[in-house]
Image (cartoon, rainbow, N blue to C red; front, side, top):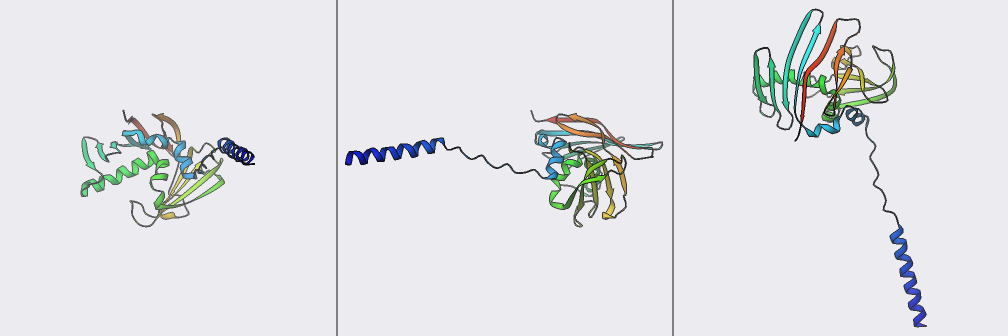
Length: 227
């Protein structure tokens, strides 16, 4: 009798062991990306962590006039160099005097135009947003998705301002509208076009207005990655 009990115990133990070995390890549940993350990643945000230096020139052609200024930014140390005409200014964004603070306003503006999709992640704690799946783009009149962000009224260089981003199913921005102080009327509307890949960072080089001789554009772009 003891012999048969021992066989039954061994059978149960073996059967349990087999079930345990055959049981699949549950796969971790992947978190659904937010619309902010989808747009940022469509412009190469996943590669930003490898960038150690970015250089670019911000240009505006309006009618017969031309304006430009150049920047060199080391994002990991936050060292910035501004080059405008024959003037060069170096500063660190963690320790700015009054001159650097004034200069940094221009840097924030130019960098925002260059990397606005990344600011959707960097500034995500300082704005509210809403997505509309079908809306009419103001310039092309295409049916596109729209993301509206409204910055908080405290802090930053332009508190309370709003931006409408228009994009297709690839999440690449095609047009946007800037609305000062979240007013209903557009303060500025431009295209996002002529995209180019710089070491995995996807940048729209041209921003044009409708029915105006205007182009805000970037050139002399160099993006260096960690070695």
